[in-house]
Image 1 (cartoon, rainbow, N blue to C red):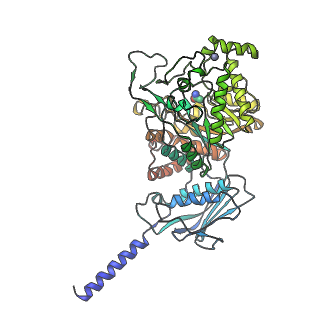
Image 2 (image 1 turned 180 degrees about the horizontal axis):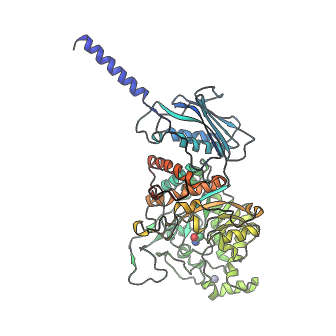
Length: 556
Ligand code: ACM
Ligand code: ZN
């Protein structure tokens, strides 16, 4: 090779190397589109070029803001090799400056992007975290999954002011019917964080499986976490005959206390409260199979293999039942810092109690006239116990029927009526009606084209239409803490299907919880389509009916 050629080749190699080192700039994704809808978005001129050299400054006196900066690092991990460098004092240029702002309320934030940098002001660390979640949606979609290191990410200039409408923005996951691994639970928490939701209600026990390790009662997981087989297809509702087929495969799973702690810590870094649910006094067969002395008859049961409501429930006549529940709850309270502890309370038949000498004796002693009153007695006792430990009882709306104390929190699921009644009598309420919040329902009326689901039909439009204040005076509305989506998993075979049932409906509920006073379905529809591209980039599965259907009349 002559010297000219050699020089040319060296120069080309050099520039190629330089190009590789520089990488590409990902252009800004415009116009700005954020779900849930922020309070105010004012687009500016120009953009900010975020690079691996962009420095992050954190306020010295603001506890928890580091979790927000960590979330930013995590969001940018696909783009840059290392977390963004930290700066002691806020740099004037090429920086992301977090600042605490005492005039902003909890969870609120102001996010300002200019060509000189990004300013995040928040009233508390949660607000800073939500600003980062918004910033994630300002990144070009390709930044979520670029497949290569890049030089710069362009972010459009904008000023966003934002705050949530409701304090409680939750989602429940049933891990009893289908068990989700710790990794899957964490991915669910990631989804909640992405949508600025802040409560993960973990349904840990039911007839078909007990999923939380309790040291004092090891058989709960040794025996109660495994069912010997599972019904295939739709449950015929108590009519189990020769036509019913079972998979004849043992099914189980449980979380060790170390794993529970790991999940709670993961949630804390994402400003999500984990509310554990220990079902009582119904939905108890897995517990009774583990310890037969917990039931009215003392019979040995098997962990349930079918889905509908079971008559076999805890015996509230026996003192040992309360000793057991208190022992379980003591360990639960050790694991979960949440002030709310969910004790279920739904769908509890009284059939066993009616025939049980201990239950009848309890009714006589306590002056209880109807068997249903035993549930009120049992709930009130557990509530007192929780209060002695500084916690609040939360339960499904059936707890109202047994006569509930004013301090209990009611989760309204059989429509909103229970929640309305509870708010009127001064109980705090979470609205989670089947009509708008049951994500185990089909997403379209065309159920033939959908994977097997519980039934019903809950299109995303209907989730979006939820008004948790409907039927309440302004004074009563003050008792509504917020809203919650529920994912029951009788017919959810895997995490992929769980995602499909959650998305995009979760985004619609997030917008109810965060942006209630500024909901606009036509506007949401356009933004969620953009959000779906992010679901794609993040590898989440979702239902795309909303994007295929012609736009509803009158929405433009
Ligand atoms: C429920 O759906 N049984 C609360
Ligand atoms: Zn009994």
